[in-house]
Length: 130
Image (cartoon, rainbow, N blue to C red; front, top):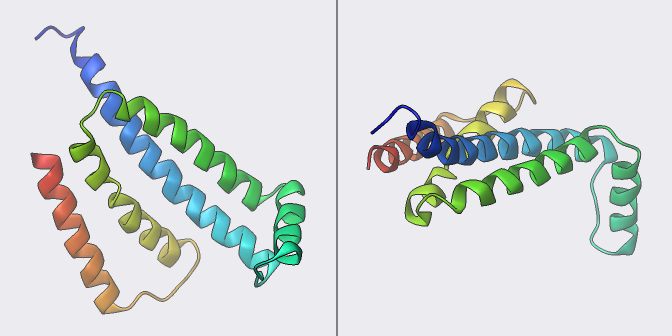
């Protein structure tokens, strides 16, 4: 394989991983934004509060924007990577979101939850090695 061909194979994987990272970051921003809005109710009033908060900018809008970029990267990667390989890698999102919840949002994460995250990480490693 030539050095010129290698980036062609690396770009889709980087797109998938970038999509996962941006999606996780988007989740943390969405949580921060919706926490500022307060508990939402289903229905027109709840949706109205959410739309009003999102249109004022800030974390909700940034989280939604990251989701949009994440979706574009995912589609790029998915067009070149096997679904049976890429989709299990999405579990990395759970690991990253849990880390973000703990260290950015300051949430308490129990030992049992960390054990579950470790099992997820082991599964991701198995898929990535395949």
